Length: 140
Figure 1 (cartoon, rainbow, N blue to C red):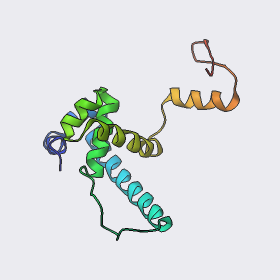
Figure 2: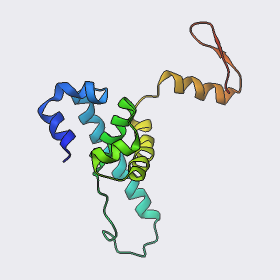
Figure 3: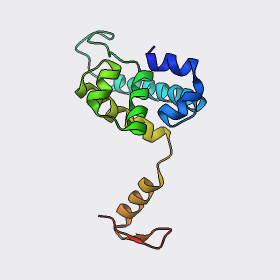
């Protein structure tokens, strides 16, 4: 378990400040992400042609829980990947890879922001729309 998770377990009221969500929401999100990750791995395993025995190879340095925390910290605080790597004791490129991998899972689990929803609608229609302030928003 990471130092951050230990801190949040002892001080759940700080979760909103550090990650932008309540502690209870964080726990539910981590559980849902772990389940989704497990389902994805099982699907990949079915289609995989194995050269190496199951359980072989290099193991991940961070647990799924720590990877979700890394992603949430990046989304809330926007530090550099170098800083995230130092905080979670992984390389800068590993922090970047983890973020881009886990953001896909979080997009499935969390509702999209209003901006993302508007962008998707505009791209699908290929036309501009007016936002709530009456300003036309183009799809470019």
